[in-house]
Amino acid sequence: MTGDSEKQAIAAVHPQLFIGGQWRDAEGGKTFGVEDPSTGETLVRVADASVADGRAAIDAAVAAQADWARTPPRDRGEILRTAFELITERADELATIMTLEMGKPLKESKAEIAYGSEFFRWFAEEAVRISGRYSVAPNGATRLLTLKQPVGPCLMITPWNFPLAMGTRKIGPAIAAGCTMVVKPAGLTPLTMLWLGDVLAEAGLPAGVLNIVTTARTGEVMEPIIRDPRLRKLTFTGSTEVGRSLVEQSAEGLLRVSMELGGNAPFLVFEDADLDKAVEGAMLAKMRNIGEACTAANRFIVHESVAEEFSGRLAERMAGLSVGRGTDDGIDVGPLVEAKQRDKVAELVDDAVGRGATVLTGGSAPDGQGYYYTPTVLTDVPLDARLAKEEIFGPVAPIFTFTDEDDAIAMANDTEFGLVAYAFTRDNARVIRVYEGLETGMVGINQGIVSNPAAPFGGVKASGFGREGGAEGIEEYLETKYVGLAL
Image (cartoon, rainbow, N blue to C red):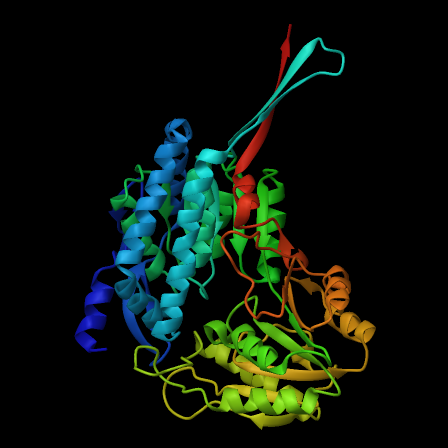
């Protein structure tokens, strides 16, 4: 990819706030830089919103709510469908923008675009399926009517790792349900969301329904919005630590809240597993998005009888991955999103090695510019290593061993998190025992990817609550009203 095409893609993004259907500068003209993680250089500067800018965004969402709620469901759905088609048509441009700001290879960016845009198509179809019920009271004297209505203005705080998909799976159901919103994308990767704002406006979304606020001062700008009595819902994807703080803030307004938080996904390989499928699944579960995913396999828990073969085959595959700038041809692994993230991955690996783990491949950051870390496989990892408890968010696969099924499930559940788990076995009875025994919101059986717009995404325990996607996803944006009709 040429430098000119990269500049053209970046130039297609408005680096401003999107409030009330208008692009505008931040108060005082303040900006912050968006970095290219492959070089450490600034790509562009975008608006750095103030508290007053945040207030203007919630004002716009509130002003648009009543009219938007009255908009026919078919019309809301058609806007989503049009936006889906526009994203699909312009996928190459968006992939370039996403790769430049986040680092992932172009093929990974295109995969996210296909996944993320599908939420708009899915919820375009769900918009016309919002329904209630009618029944007769037990004494026959009253008719009971229930209906679903939009929750109202929402605040959406999205992460940097999937800058499109983590937004579309919140924005899609909100639009379908008839809710207005303020979206705060991650400061590391705001360009994708700003690009999406233009697309939704072109698709016909009325002014004020979607408002985008970029800021380097997230807590300072978002807390007044969370505490605004007109806000009715808060949804956040990110770390458990930040999620806990946001839930506390939301309590004042008794907001509807959905939280998709951290993970520590176990990847179980039983003695009867098809190792070809297990290794392939491991590559998907570990290396999707360079390992920077809450669904990434964090702990490989492998039966001792197949651990050596599985580890060797996985190390061979990981060692064969090409590392480099995401816009270059043939690249499998791009840089991590920032120096802080790369340094944390290095600390976790060094801690494990210091406690006795063996490096089969990788284990270090290459020299040169950019925030790269070599794909790594560790064996003989002790259970007291930090990466047994902490989310890695990088291309590192630590392997632990077990002796029997109960041990494997106990090891898998030995974490405060409960987002997703993976298990590979050919025993159908074991499949049932395992997915019933795992303390997670999602389970992948003999597959390394579970995310699907048609399925409910979410976790339990410290991984949060609420569901995104599937038929359940739109319920997060709907209130149930009961009407009693006397005869």
